[in-house]
Amino acid sequence: MACFVLNGWAAAETAWSLCKFNRDRVFSYRDHLDGATSRAFDAASRVTLVGWSMGGTHALELALRSPEKVASLVLVAATPRMMKDGTDWPGMTERRLAALDYGLRLSARDTHLPVNPYIVDDETALSRGLDYLRRTDLRARLAASGEALSKIPVAIFQSEKDAVVRRPHADFLASVFASSRLTIIPGAEHALPVAIPSLIDSALRANGK
Image (tube, rainbow, N blue to C red; front, side, top):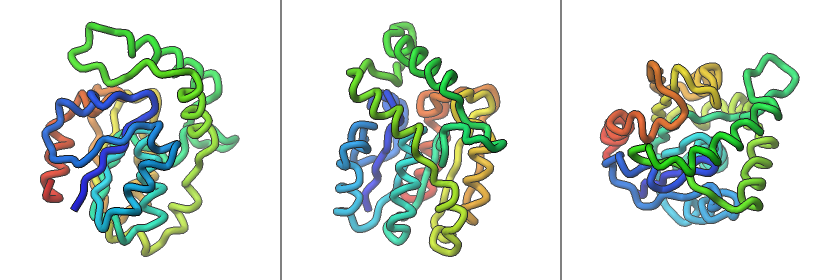
């Protein structure tokens, strides 16, 4: 059984270097946008999906498309909908998204981090990723999935101080997946693969990885 890691927007493969679980491939956000992640998923028979942030959103898309192929899901600071939408959904505003864009560019140049989870990418790729975050909304499809997703073992990790993906996003996902385990990480922020590698390893070991 394959294990695919689906990275977040502007995230580097090194973000997972502290994690020890066995993985077959780390897919970049570009891979999601270009269809490489989906093609690998379609070619596999059974897959464990580990998705961080935007990668978590794409993992949810794949699970909705072919739930029978998903052996388990590990959702790390994942969201079905990044943006606000005129309701009480605590998503990001365009102004906050612009601040995130600026902040990640600075973080990608920070040489003081023990492991830098971000990359400096070209403007076209970064803009395509932001457009994906703006337009993707899986809430209605997830809420209507019924029995289809109910048997997938799901581990959900959410940071207490995450300013990108908020607690209600994790609560929504926990309500969709009947067999999910939600873990709130006190004091942490968005870069959980770096902050809690041992907890992510434990979740994968529980599923044979």
